[in-house]
Length: 149
Image (cartoon, rainbow, N blue to C red; front, top):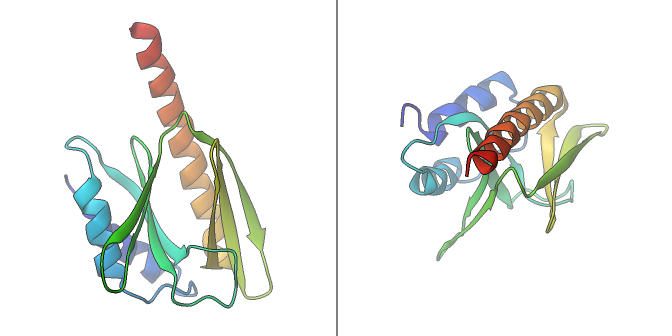
């Protein structure tokens, strides 16, 4: 594991300071690091509010794009945490919304839609590019491994 989630997230927050991502970032990133597989590498990491509301400020979570999947983590305030993993076979597509102040992305999977709101509008193209290209590459690898079996 070359990079940890917090180091990757700090690159994002410095590049796009307009996102509303201030609450317990290091704790959320520890959950990502805990669930990384031995050969898994973080390609891109960003944070936002894990809901559809622009008024939410205490629902921060971290999203990490790896060479194998999308990971979503949120450390609970008192006890436990929430972790989701989206593998290439479950990924459908993504929508990007730009509002007056912030933007939002919706990651559509076979089972659910994951909303990440209060993102800097200038970060939206990079988030979309990183998620889409990473999932396309992972799907190719996933299909190729399935054919080899």
